[in-house]
Amino acid sequence: MTTAKLFDRVALIGIGLIGSSLARVLRRESRQTTLVACARSAETLEVVRRLGIADETTDDPQAAVEGADLVVVATPLSAYAGIAERIVPGLMPGAIVTDVGSVKAAALRDLQPVLAAPVHLVPGHPVAGTEHSGPEAGFAELFRDRWCILTPPPDTAPEAVARVTRLWEAAGMRVATMAPDHHDRVLAMTSHLPHLIAYTIVGTAMALGGDLKSEVVTYSAGGFRDFTRIAASDPVMWRDIFMKNRDAVLDVLQRFSEDLTALQRAIRWGEAEILENRFRETRAIRRSVIEAKQA
Amino acid sequence: MTTAKLFDRVALIGIGLIGSSLARVLRRESRQTTLVACARSAETLEVVRRLGIADETTDDPQAAVEGADLVVVATPLSAYAGIAERIVPGLMPGAIVTDVGSVKAAALRDLQPVLAAPVHLVPGHPVAGTEHSGPEAGFAELFRDRWCILTPPPDTAPEAVARVTRLWEAAGMRVATMAPDHHDRVLAMTSHLPHLIAYTIVGTAMALGGDLKSEVVTYSAGGFRDFTRIAASDPVMWRDIFMKNRDAVLDVLQRFSEDLTALQRAIRWGEAEILENRFRETRAIRRSVIEAKQA
Image (tube, rainbow over all chains, first blue to last red; front, side, top):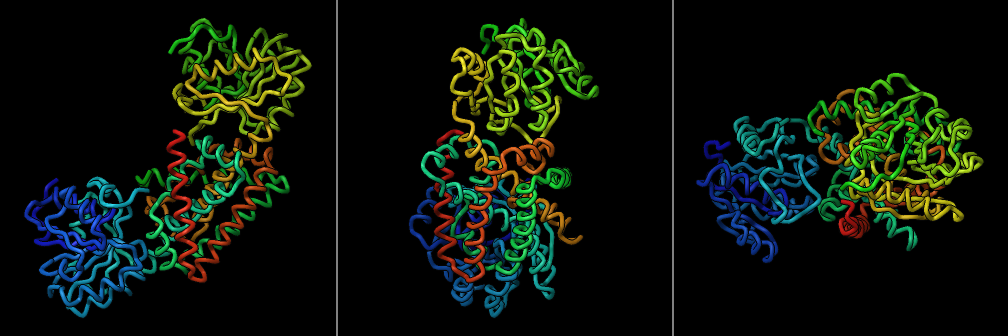
């Protein structure tokens, strides 16, 4: 699919798995779009140049956004506030600023300073990823058939939202819009809690004694393997997600712990029927997920 | 790979995902082996006949094992004791009795009565599966490159262990031997706890209010999706696993809960460094799993 040129000049602030995958999409969609990649580390920028996925590279966020009609913030969430402050002087009036972060209330709050520019702020979250990170891990098909959730403030210009929508549609995504707080509650359940649990169980296994620990790795095919993949995700990105979506994560985590304790009790007291009924109920939801085309 | 005939007559007691996959392997390996499939339900036996994966079908375990030099018990664990009792009168002296259950101390205990026959008892656990169940879900390649763990009592005839080893090797498995209790502790961590957690988190999500619940399904790509697959596994089989491996499961579950509570506390108090360090540690174990060729 090749569409008309989406933007003239795109600044990608952060060029990891998501940023570099988006760069590849933009390359594929239009050769006329100029891509500027911005990263703190010289090593990352060298990789970007070697991969040939951007036209220009810089470690200066303000220089990166100059003349850009689209700015995509794709760093860990903890860097947002600093980036917002640094890019304000360089932003072109009327530019669109978006991001790809996994927590939207915090993203909106931390990027708020850019509105001094004046620009259009359209926070977004392409719900896609792998356990790999860095510009070499990116690929254009990462987004295909996944959802992208946009959380623009109510007064955002509809045309700005429409242009960001077209961007992600060009990447193969389905695009939905919702309020930031609601996004954060949904993702706390579907993504943040599962990652926390995966990190935890892999840690629990690592803490087992010598023999048992190596055998857990050897015989990981029975379920644990899936958790190790999830728990291999980027540590800094996930640290920031839990810091920035604290309340929603603590809420679903508390619910989960209560439910787990109830099953633990059923196991201890041999209440087979409670377990079987619970397992039958959960089996049904798999069909819903398959029907929602996420499987 | 085609090997010499492994057995003359094989009785499969239970013909679900694992039993029917093994039937397909035996079919592929040797046309001269007679396969007898035994199931309680007429419907299951009708499916087996339609699929053509067995030479004979019966709902009578005693009749099934008559003349068999290999008996494979492949039912949920709660049926073992009753099956052992029923097949004893039909067992051919010198036959090998094995099973495919996920808890080995209980399997050994519940199948013990067959030793009155006299036969060779070689409990086993092919660590393979999918979230699907029943004879139609089976396929010969299910076992390829996975581990099978045998837990024969110390006084078992080595030739009987060797023949069961050759069976699973013919299915493409790597075969290891260990003590039943040790198996149960390893699998509690690698398989039983992950399944319990997956069942729990899917249940937690289902209990959310209306809007949120349907959105959890829609936006499940971020981690939750993997859990729904695991939580779609057979409810009766898993009920039995938790009933039969209670102590080992409760032990790793307690460890997991403590570790999760520690991370919960770090989130609540904003202790970013604790989270990041933990996430870095767990990322490393993924490489071990890939190196162990289980990924």
